[in-house]
Length: 195
Image 1 (cartoon, rainbow, N blue to C red):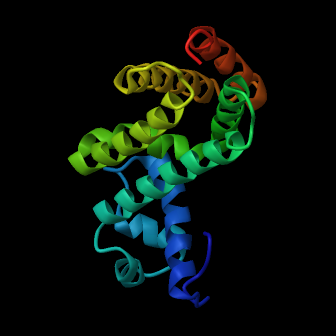
Image 2 (image 1 turned 60 degrees about the vertical axis):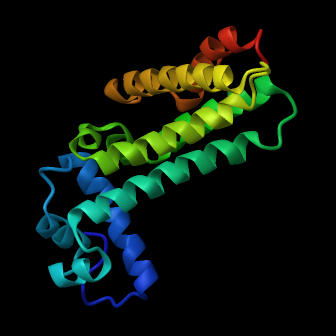
């Protein structure tokens, strides 16, 4: 239990606490199997407190998905922003990607879990995260046609997803830095001639 109902938090902190608890519960149980009762119980609050902050389970999950995706994108762009060469930015981006999921393994279940297929707005939010990632990577690709760059960047996104799925399904048995280096090496093999 993260906090008890007897601990009175300011609204903003309580809302974030509920989102933090929900990340673990949704990751563990999935969207359909998670109830508002389970979320309230895990957070140590009453169901009415949960409903004060979120109108429904759907709204809570959608906000959680948006926040988690934004945190991932922020982590990637902060790591790679100040580096000089495209290769350094690609490598730093993959390091940030794997470090994020190493530090927040429950985020994997939310961003890449089967819950995304259950609702069009969830798919739309996941698509927004993927599109933002592709747009970021496309800026590293020096081709004249922006659409071509975004299409290739989307392929890099698919590579990232495949590598992270493999790593998570094998219990993160290899260090995040090792997986990031492996992914960057694979991605850079294709990007090298385009950057």
